[in-house]
Image 1 (cartoon, rainbow, N blue to C red):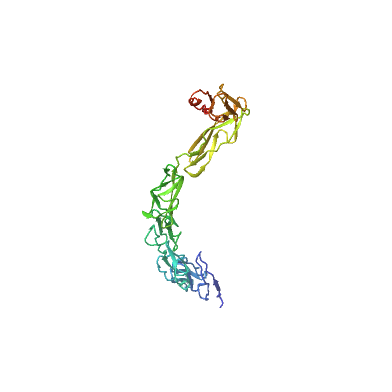
Image 2 (image 1 turned 135 degrees about the vertical axis):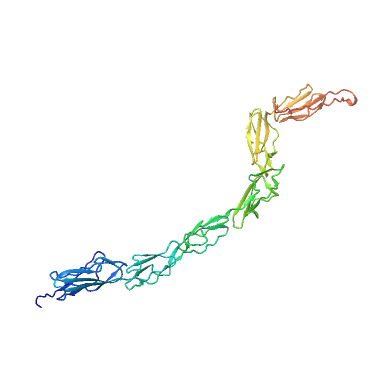
Length: 483
């Protein structure tokens, strides 16, 4: 038609941040319309219950339109879910009228509210409106169960995916048994997450394991404790020092009676056994005699009692043989003589056999001695320090005898001239008269042998003899050699 222009217009609608059309609308304006375009109805999927909607004001033929008005909310208004229509009316110069309706629908997709399930905590990005995502959490002391996902999403269909929700159940640990010989104290009677139990042993027992255990994720931390008896029994009457007794005279042992120690464990008597040593009333030898007793309780703990029975030897050794003074004689021509003597013999009550002796002074047997007096000393010591002495003397003299008593009537013939040394002999006789005494005398270590000699004068009378008083023997060589 001449004078009219048919215009086909494609209109794209753009909106502010966060809001867009999901489709475009296009329209063809009729030749007699005062509007160049009028948008087709559209739907907006909102992600909240309030939606700001924008659109362009419909274009008009300015040469033909005298005025235009809007009936309804302006672009950029906030709408809730629902269907809306905004009417635009235009009046031409020629008195004609045209109408353009802007029609749109605000669609809010809501999923059913998630019910409160037990103690679960729900955190959603957009409530229950698409495309909200909700995460399930369990508070402290609870854990998620049921084997379901901890996340769900609100879909365009208005359903939750997945549609099953987890459950928070109270975290519990199995009940702890109370070990024997322990005292158990727990934080609360309900055994839940964080509950702790503390264990202590009764006096006399030692703990092995964890003194405190805590319920964490349905399990107890640490190791179940046990209280074990590790204390040995107590001995009463165990001597702290050695029991000292003196040995009897001449004895090498002593019969000793001692009080038997006793043992207790937890105030209960415990049997005492002898491990080593001798029981009370036995004979104990000289020195230290160890007595070892043990007591074992029901847990196998062992207590020991050790003490010594000390039999004290306070008796010195005794010499069974100690030489008497020894006299030795040397030849005048020789200045020494070899002297042999028997070593002294000592006994002690600590041994049935002779004990060792030690020469502490003088020369040993078989040594050479010149004339003089020599002191020989031996000592004997027992194991406890007692000692005895044996002292004897060796007297060495030059072998000589005193001159024989001479008289005119005794005739003497000797094997050598004075001095008369050992081994010298003399033959004695009378020149006249009767001879009395030993006719032959020899010089020995003790002096002259025999009896002194004399010649008795014969007096006429009865039997032509006169009896003279007896002559006492002369003591020769009996002087004390020490003096």
